[in-house]
Length: 273
Ligand SMILES: NC(=O)c1ccc[n+]([C@@H]2O[C@H](COP(=O)([O-])OP(=O)(O)OC[C@H]3O[C@@H](n4cnc5c(N)ncnc54)[C@H](OP(=O)(O)O)[C@@H]3O)[C@@H](O)[C@H]2O)c1
View 1 (cartoon, rainbow, N blue to C red):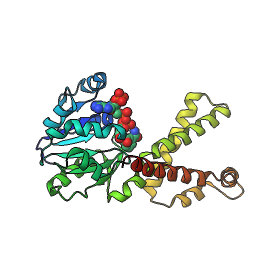
View 2 (cartoon, rainbow, N blue to C red):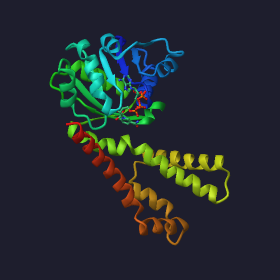
View 3 (cartoon, protein in one colour):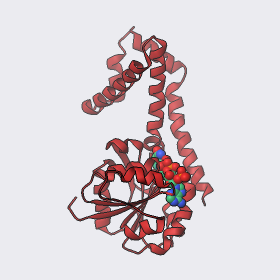
View 4 (tube, protein in one colour):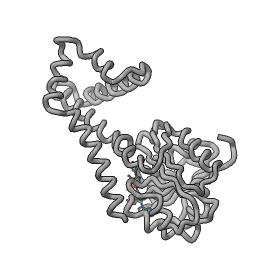
């Protein structure tokens, strides 16, 4: 990224909008304008962040920004777009992270004045390890805006550029994925406590095991099954536990949970038509 200032507005500073505000505020080129209907959320984010300005409403945020990140729940998006529509111009770009809201619905609700992109983030964005889907299909998007948005996201994590028809599938795996991982780790923590370890140690053990396993998989580049075989020696203890997982269909259940997420995103998209 060059040093030209980029004015980014964030409307809705809850879990995701707040995570974007924190991550973007670390990038020296970014000037942030934020608004949430709960003023305390913005005030907390503004503390100690010089290039972050709290706006009085969504329309002001849109008026002061070039890139406008819409980070309210999908069911609130239409109201926000109606409020900001009079302040949009062709040189601005809408960035939507709403699960299940199509670009054509965003264009319709905003009057189609400016182009839009869809981004699907996940919560590890809070620690600079976000994984993003990015949809740049809008034919009105200038090349330099595409490059700018891609660069901004790359500064905060890993980016997959894809077509819009893939974004709900991505969201099921990567957006919801952290939630499933935490439930699995919670199960490890519970088991460790059941085996007599103090809660604090149990949590740390689950976390260190997850972190080390992810790093090993990343650095070795090996298939997950090969890495599993490294642990599951013939006649050993891991294979005894793994057989239980196979008998009770745990892998299938996890895959089904991801498919359910995908189905729910499609259902939400249908409800909004
Ligand atoms: N959480 C995730 O892991 C995740 C992952 C991928 C995508 N997303 C998407 O991210 C978006 C935000 O989700 P979230 O989990 O961050 O929700 P959230 O924590 O509820 O944050 C939304 C914030 O926007 C505020 N808000 C609602 N209506 C508003 C309005 N008209 N003007 C200004 N602020 C308003 C909400 O206030 P109230 O609390 O008063 O309603 C809340 O503070 C959703 O579209 C979701 O689909 C989330």
